[in-house]
Length: 361
Image 1 (cartoon, one colour):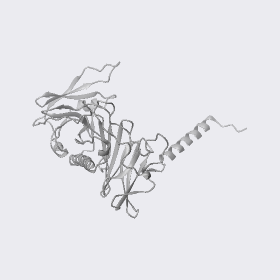
Image 2 (cartoon, rainbow, N blue to C red):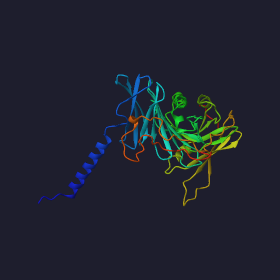
Image 3 (spheres, one colour):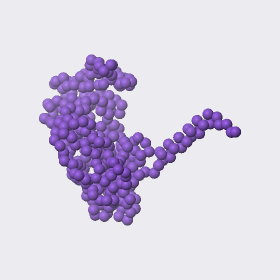
Image 4 (cartoon, rainbow, N blue to C red):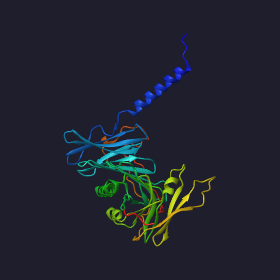
């Protein structure tokens, strides 16, 4: 009788698990439609592919010419991509939506001739709360997800979107898509001009009508207070007036602690501000705030601003914008990728708060 050692069994099982993981990680990308869908004028066609190999997958819009020749793939990273409902908005813009949960929706927009792609994701975690906006683009500097400061249904910084649609069909209107593209490209241009790879938001924003908004951020790993005018009418105006205030080295060290403290910034009048630190709650009780930095911003002003309120029920169509039978991904009952099934994040809610010398931007 052949005896098999436990070590051999463990080794064999480990190899099988590794093999299965490799096979799963290298699985072929999934494709939304059997054939690429042509634009209205027939010059270009598009299809969607997505890679589910890891937690952060890849959402790809594949562009073809009228003969079916593959031209380019426009890619953005997305957590657990789940696209549906591919449609052309005009002869140049193509889009699809992406399921990201019961209270959220994602929209992927691609300008087919230039190969520029923009992902917009919106989540309403609870009724009567601000919408959470995130964005990404097929940018060469950084395609990482961009978190935003918002009020109500308005995204304020760094992606400024004041005219967010009242209904789902509005997210597939070419005018809104162009607004998204301009907002994201303006932010990308600002980063490139300043040599910035990414800005990570660390605190809620304190917005004062006469001054503007301030928040704590890490700019490529360096802690700063960032100021922006919340009432700016355009992204270009906003970034022309952004100010950055570097925080001292002791705060840089604090952010390396595990867990890092909760930092908050507050206006104190006349352009003055303080940064406070709150340590992690102990037995459900948060520590008293400790002021760790203070500063003053010169030559700042803002005009009255009110975020677009989240009150009222927003009407959703009974089916998706694209009724074509070929747009339905074969799926089982209850699969969010079925034709006409899109998540509903429209809820009755109302606006609430979100989430030395300054260095010129």
